[in-house]
Image (cartoon, rainbow, N blue to C red; front, top):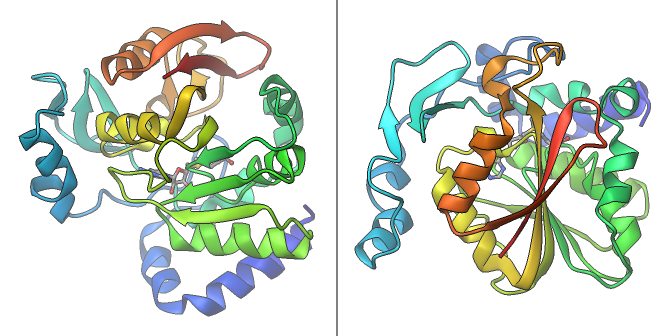
Length: 275
Ligand SMILES: C[S@@+](CC[C@H](N)C(=O)[O-])C[C@H]1O[C@@H](n2cnc3c(N)ncnc32)[C@H](O)[C@@H]1O
């Protein structure tokens, strides 16, 4: 998508949510590959102390003892650890230009990633933490007449992605506003969940992984894509990268089973899990 079109869509989104944009503008730094725009940690929400996570814990569906912990917040983190990893701030919608940058194809080989998913017409798929929809749109085209969900916790991202789908005539893409602990997808309906550069930002990774598993059909697959923390040459901030070992530890702790690791992407791990 050209810069002028990105600016136009971003303008439409901004007009629809002027107050939110103004608030974010006070908090977000400029975009760039080593500086993904972030917002400060959310104030403790109801979900931290009550609501579905607490209700599920009471029902016996709780993260392993000691999995979560507090730490001193680093500039890119929220001061909360999961299996020793500090969770990163989520990237603000003001970083849409970075997600849509022209160099992304050569840096991340996004079209090779879409090929690796082996999508078929009629499938039901979800791009969780979809952002601007850079990956959701090509997924939707490949699975049509099936459904592609794009979920995010930022309404501004969903407005951008839906406006873009309308503009490009993609009618089988549905935006879903998720919660920080629940992906809000219909249970048992999804063949494949894609997570690109989003999982490490989940404030409640255990709860999110459980909700993703609930959304999957039996045998449904999860493709986890994260920048390689093992490689110092990948020019991304440390908290926005993950090692393969850490990723496997975390998703398996929440009940998914690792199947394989695909090494075709230049900067990122592509890890496959099943329900
Ligand atoms: C770095 S962006 C990546 C966007 C997209 N996957 C891509 O690669 O172009 C991460 C996105 O994850 C979203 N996110 C963070 N926590 C989330 C959660 N619990 N549920 C859904 N989306 C979340 C953020 O709002 C942000 O849009």
